[in-house]
Length: 430
Ligand code: SDX
Image (cartoon, rainbow, N blue to C red; front, side, top):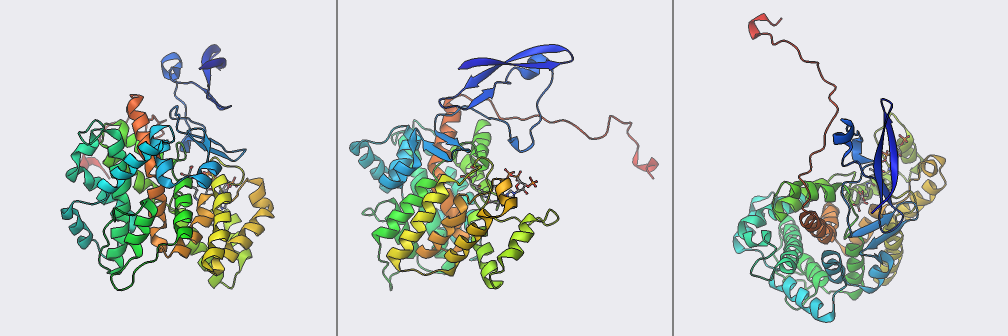
């Protein structure tokens, strides 16, 4: 892939480093031989300028607001596919034939249950336990009950089954954690329902109050999960790759990814957005107060749901989600003052020099929580919804890292502590 050469002059010596080019216009200076050639490393806190790998799964262009999964624009996939279909695409690299889809759906049904011993896990968590904490710990525990899932060539049909098992069981874990938190009896997955309908039914069906599965809600949930399905080397995906690069199993790697996603700077932002909108609403809609806080360098407060490491324009996912918001609110005849607050906040931000100068636009987390609210999903489960959506991406990225036989990830540092010094015994320290 080497197209050109970069020249680096250090101590009057010129070094040549290859420039590699990806499928589109993305290019990189390949520094894999830098230390060997020059004795120097690079320093890049937060990896703002550093590519960790090559990948054929997702392409995004932050300037143009483009996001493609395996070459397909998310706009087309969100409009025409189900989440399970897109999960298959991301994991296998091709859209499924109807036969392959039926087999994948069958695997999702086959593997939807949790080992009955695992149900006791939910009895041990307090009802106030964070659903992300439950998801991360319970996913890790899957290894003890399904060790064959670590082996992509397992007797149950290899990698496809492994992925289907993880996609299906995490959905069950999420719904069970909710039922336990509200003290309702668990609703088991139904073999007659598709991925999203099953999740909604497991979440909201009750013996005394049957849940009506509405096509509009199922369609909106499919769209939301599709839009979260992968996003190249973000914090949590990089975590999954890094943990997996040590040889840790798929569950442990994804459990670590769930933990990374939990942070309010990442997947926890969708929950933080709702809390921010509620605060603005409760604070007599004092938008200017919150905008001033977000711009005040002495205040750590940030306008959550805005800004992105890569997108310097409207996050293409946020655009689709905002449209879906309007549609589902109309279909369900829902009124939520937070949607109006969100739209007014977006409007004010879009006219504010501070945000425009820094290319701060709504990201995927800004409107997603408002739709989850309309579905009746509790705010503290919003990061879990993000994790369910991101599951195919994490599985595919982990597998690609394995197939590429990636070395163990081990960044270096520049040491700024004490120079070597003489040891002083305790009795001589004053
Ligand atoms: C996700 O990476 C991915 O792909 C993630 C994700 C995915 O699909 O996996 O897209 C999902 O995590 C979306 C982001 C969700 N997080 C939030 O909404 C939290 C709020 N946003 C920020 O904290 C921030 O924008 C980040 C974390 C998203 C990005 O941070 P960067 O790239 O490190 O940007 P930065 O901190 O260098 O900010 C640049 C400037 C700074 O000001 P100056 O120092 O230049 O004066 O913009 C300011 C920042 O202070 N800034 C904000 C801001 N975000 C950045 N100021 C106010 N409010 C904000 N939200």
